[in-house]
Length: 434
Image 1 (cartoon, rainbow, N blue to C red):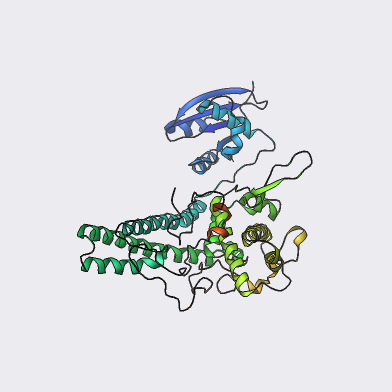
Image 2: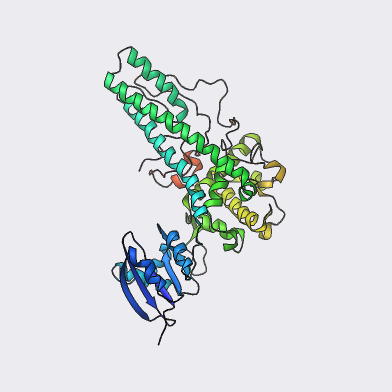
């Protein structure tokens, strides 16, 4: 009698569906199981391969099923979709998962431990608070517009806006009800600022204590936030054969639409983890910006690229190069190049020039929080003048721990007017519009 070799599991909140197949791929059973009976069902099965999509709760169930003696494989949902037949329901999805898991060339997602997911939570919680803070700033600026005040973007201007609101309330130019609501939003803003600062210190502490994060911060453009996020969210380095594969996973390599022997390359593929890709772009923007202002090392790759290519293209290329370097760094356990670029330091920089905390090129602008870099500050310039019923002249604010590059520096915002939420960005107060 045939034995069940592979089970496809379609997970949900309360109702699950399992599809079992033998070694030849023939269906053995397809049944619906409630959440409370799922572990009892798998405990009664012989050890086999259990496949499920890498979606919400997948890592939890993977750990539970592994303890029961099964081999668990997590498949990206995009790789399951081609195996879905006509229509869509739980039974068809479970069958597609089972069939996808039997393909010899299928790629799987590494199962995360509870500690790894906790580290990711430490990184994502400040992102949530930053988005809430951004919404408050947008609300304050938007409501002030109704009273003839056009305020500049950025959390650094909120203190001046608070003083303006108090002055307007004292002169009776602002209704009492409006002043009360503005005061409430400003109090919430102050509370969020304190929590974000505390979490930033926690991230910096984790980066200092973690060996992998310290090694990652030797790469130009990688600071505590980026290093912590990569260590928590990126798959194990041994998953990739070489550093360039990691760059492809980040989505920094171009799309290919080649056919007939003709190579056609498009924009960046934007595959993989969007948060990590954005952090690499932000870090590369800081490196390119400082190199443009202070000059790149003579004869370096960065200097040659800046001399003949647009800065946005150089930023993405540097992020791609940095991802390649990250893969080699994690795999080898030390800073080194990979492939044919062996011995060529990234952007022509020596390791002594890329210290993550105080080096000229090392950390993302403002990530360390130790000092405010002067790359965006105009000395002696007045930040802005509050003049009613007209746009306020102002200078760019000092970069914060959650700085995002300008539109021309960010390739993901140049193709449409829609804004993309940042994982650790948010100096601009309009970045989280849907």
